[in-house]
Length: 464
Length: 67
Image 1 (cartoon, each protein chain N blue to C red):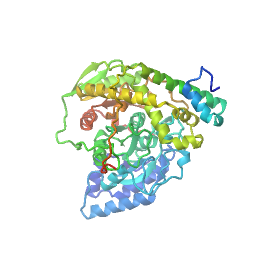
Image 2: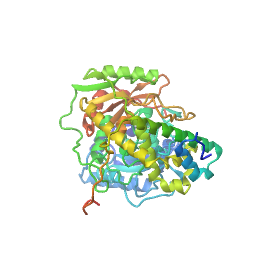
Image 3: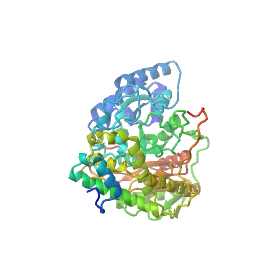
Image 4: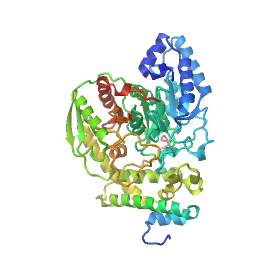
C-alpha cells in the first residue's frame, strides 16, 4: 500500500503543501519508497534518484518555509522517462548497449520542471530506444516487460511504459513521456490515466534521445487532464537548443475556459477492428460528450499516412542509430526483432524517405483543414485494452486496431489527449482520445477537463 | 540469396551488408520486414505528387546567428 498522499492530484497536493499539511521531503520520500517497493515489481523503474530527489525536495521545503512559492508544481515529485538526460543518474534509453551512459547536463524539460520547483525522484523504464527498432516482443527493455498495475500479467503499453505504470499505480503524481508514434497515448490508455501529446515543437526535445527528429514529442502522463495542463504549462516554450521548438502562446489554466458549446467530429468507421467493449465504452462517452458538445460524423480522407510515418520513423531512426547498426551493438538489444529490423531500416532509399516527407506535407495540409473545423476529433485511443505479456505486437503494414487518426495525427504533429473512459469486463481500462488542430492544446484540455468533471473514470484505482 | 529476384531490394542490400551476423531465422524476419517497408513505399508511390510538391521541411541558410 503506497502513501495515500500519492493518490492525490497535483492540485490537491499543492493545497496540502501550501497549508503545511505535508512537506516536499515527505512526498519525495513516499514516492521513492513506493517506487522501490511497488514500482520495481512492475518493471517501471530504471533508477531511483535518492540524492537529487532529496536535495530538490529540501530546497523546495526551504523556499516554501521562506514564503517563496514557485507555482503549482512546487514540491511535487515526478519521474522522467529514461530517455531524458538528467544529472545524477544514468540515461540508458532502455537499451543494454547504453546501460552505463550518463550525461552531465539536464534536458530542457528537466531543467524547466526544476525551475518550476518539481522534484525529480526517478528515471522510469521504457521500451528500448523508444521502440524505434520495430519491437514485436513486449519485454523489449533491459528492465523487463512493462507490467500493468491493473493486471501485472498485462502490458503497460509502450514506449513510455514506466511513466504510465508509475502514475497509474499511484507511485508518482506525474511523469514525462515521449511519443514518436503512440508512446504517450498508448500507455495512458492501457494504464487508465490521462496523457497529453503536445503539438510537435511545443516542448523542447533538447537532451531527449532522438529517434525521429521530425516526429518526437515530449509530454506529461498524469491522473487528470487538469494536471496535464499544469505540467505542460511548465515545460512548453521555445528553446535555443532545439531549433524546432516554437514560441506559441500557451497558458494553463486558460483565461477563458470553455465549459460547453464544443464542436466534435467522430470519424466514420472508427469502430472497425475495435474490441466490442471499447466500442461500447466509447458510445457511452459520446453520450456524455453530447451534454456539452455537438457531435458530427466525418469521413477522414484515405491517405497513406501510416505508410509515410513508417518510412520516416524507420529511416530517421536508422540514421540516429547508425553507429549502433554498423558496429553491431544492435545485436545486444533485448527484443529479437530489434536485432534484425534496423539492418533493413538502414537501407531505405533516400527517394522513399523524401517521397514520404512530400506525402507528409499533403497530409498535414488536409488535416489542418479538417481540424480547423472542429474543437476535436474523437475516437478510442487504442482499439483494444492492454494485451497480455505473452502476446506480440502486430506489425502488419496496414494497422487497423489503433485510433483512425493516430497516424495522421502524429505525422502532422497534432496534439492529442487520452483520458480513461471506463473499464471492460475483465477490469482493464479503456480510453477516449481528443485530437485537435496544431497549437490548440488549451481547447483539448478544456474538453477533457469538462468530460472528467462529468465522469469518474479517472478516479478508478488499480488493484496492484 | 542476395540476388534472388523474390527478395525485396532493401533486404538484398541489408543481407549484403550485414547478413553474416544474422542466422537463417533472423534473415527470414529481415526479408519480411523489408517486404512490409516495400509495401508501404509502394503505397506512397501510388500517391500522386507533382513536381512542386516539396518535402515537409525547409532548408534555411545560416547567417551566423542561427547556430
